[in-house]
Structures are given as C-alpha cells and as structure tokens.
Image 1 (cartoon, rainbow over the protein chains, first blue to last red):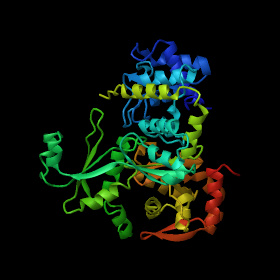
Image 2: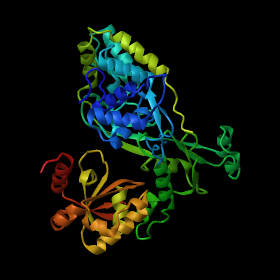
Image 3: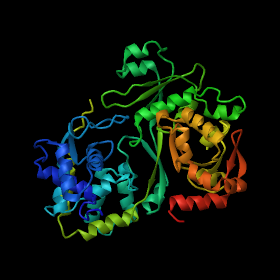
Length: 343
Length: 131
C-alpha cells in the first residue's frame, strides 16, 4: 500500500529508512548496499534480490524522475549490463530522498513524490510526470482552490519518460482515469558523417563514408528497453534480406536496407548510427526504424482517478499543513541532484 | 501484425489471438504483443524453434524444442515486438480454435486468425483473469 503522505511504496520507504538508519544521509557517507538490503530484510522481511532491484531503480535517473538515492559504484547502464553485486555498490540518500523521508515521517508537509515518479519503471501502470509541473499544479491549487481540472491538466502536461523519448497514445483517456496504451519512441534523425564529426564523433570511424552521405542516428531511447537489444533488433532486421521469394510483399514490408549498424554508446551517451544501402531512401528507413521494437516501446498505463480532480483532492486534503514549504524543499532538493556517473 | 506474417511465412502453424487478431477482425483497439496459439505437433514445434531462433533479439533465450513441448507459454522478444507463444492453449484447444479460425492476408501471407468470439474469450481469460 502506498504511503499517504508521499505516494511511495512500502519497500521504497523501507529502503530510505534503512539507509538513514545506517548513516547514509545526503552529503554523508556511503553505505554498502548489502548492509541496506540486510536491514530492509530485517525490517519488512523482503528478500534481498528483489530489494536490490527496487533500490537500483530508485537511484537511476533514466528510471525515475527524481532519484531518491545517490548511487556509487557500478549500478549498470541502459544496455544489458546489470548492476554489480550489492557487495560492491554503495548508496546514500539523495537530497530529494531526505525530503521525501521527512515528509513520510510527518517532519514536514507531504510531497507528491509517488505521482512524480510513477511506477512504470517497475512494470506498474502509473506513468511519471515532470516534477516541476506537478509542483506547479499543486501550487496552483493552493493559490486558487477553485482552479478547473482542465487548467490543472494544462499545467501538468503529458507523462514524461525522462530520456527525451516521444510519448503518444490516448493521453486524454489517461488523464480522465482510463486505461491507455502509450507508445514511446526514440528520436530518429537523418544526418551525415560530416555533421557527426562536427559534433565530436570519432573521425576514424566516420571518415570512410562520404561526408554528405546519409546516416540515421537513433538516440533518446525509451527508458525501459535495453539499448543493446535495440541495436540487436535493428541488426536482425537489416539481416533479413529478401526473406522469402514466395512472399515479395512481406519481403518488401520487412526489409530494412542498411549496410551497417554501429552502436556508438559511450560514457552514458546512448546512440546508434545506421548507414543506408546505396540508393535507399533515408526517410523511408527512418519510418521503418520507428517501428522496430527497442526503438519504440509500449507501456500500459492508468491513473487511480482522473488526474485534475486527483491533484485538487490531494492538495485540499493536506491544506492544513505547510505544503508551500515542503514543495519548496523538494524543488530545491531536485535542483541540487547529483548527476549519475556511468563511466 | 508483421510478426504474425513472418511466422506464417516460416511455415509455423498457429492461430493468431489477442489484440492483433481482434484488430484484424475489425475491432478498433491498440495492438500490443503478438499472441499465437501454437499447433502442438512435433514437426511444428521444430519449425517454431527454428523461426524463433532467427527472429529473437536474444537467441540464447529461445527455449529448446523439448522445453517447448512442456512450457505453458514461451515469450520471445523480436524486432517486431514481443511474441507470446501460447503452447499449453495449443495442446488443450488446437482443434477447436483451428476450426473457428479464418485466413486473413497480412501483406501477401495468409495468417490464421481466431474467431472474434474465441479471441475475446482468451483475452478475458489471460488479461482479466476470468475463467
């Protein structure tokens, strides 16, 4: 059951509590994750393997809008590389984590952390929203309790999945409290070797292609797909040459005319470059790429109630507490967030 | 939808169910994963295994033929999206589902698609937990 004051789940709160209990406050010392998981197991009986998955998700900026932990060590990347064993990784509370924990304990007014972070990163149905927009929406209700739900929806905007991927689907249905299927798509851009080199890409890699030839670059991948899998999916599709002479229509529909696929991901920047066959239409390839799993992802979402009234009700039920102060604390803590070093 | 056509072009015998089947039957609904009830005969499981090996983004995770004989469901990630092979459903109901199915062309490949009634019944059973 979610905590009424923060919207966080029981396990997330137990992890925050354990970290703090072991001295892992924001700006303080790191705590070995193995010790945190042992404390969580002692307090709520949660198996360590599952606890570690939740802990890692709480720390990674492509999984949650507001990381509640500050990770140190190898917590994995966006490919198929998992975090190192909890025996070798450390964490402490982020400043936002400290604010959320204080709100959960009643040491300050509530904060809408659960609404901001959602739970789709753990295969739940609540999508994430931009933190500054949720904070602005709550403030708008505090300023004008009669604000219309429609105006609040304008302030909140669509769900935001952290990586810059595009989001489409039945957004109106989602806001109205209905189930919706969202499609998340990476950014797919047609560029050239010359432009890539001007942006700092490896000259050694790109000098062998004509400077003004087409290169299709894919980045801003959806957050819950592996970039390694996306690269493998593109390469698999490109290798399906003339699938079957019995089905020319299917061959035409599935053939992806690429002569090379290069995963250029490095030091936390994830991008794949695709080199079209000579004479192939880059725009057509771009459209085909957008339909390849990994370049797109589908997420089933639903909110427990229509979003506008829910924000109004949440705020109204807590207006006897100093929400302005807790929102300001959360905002300031988010602004002070430490970047995650993936190198 | 293309995934079903690719599977059929690889001579795998299956009946398409789920949202893709309902979409092909004219229902206005978003299409998610591809759900296929697999004919349980041994030669078909071998063809399925070969097709999955060529389609899978992670081929090492494709179950062996002997595993396919006993698994209830095999999920495989492909460049066309996720494929759920409903193996147990095939062992239990292949004849009945095949009887109600109809061939619908996807590009130039014929795909056996479950009747709308069967597709809805299976969807309710798997998605909503009824029955």
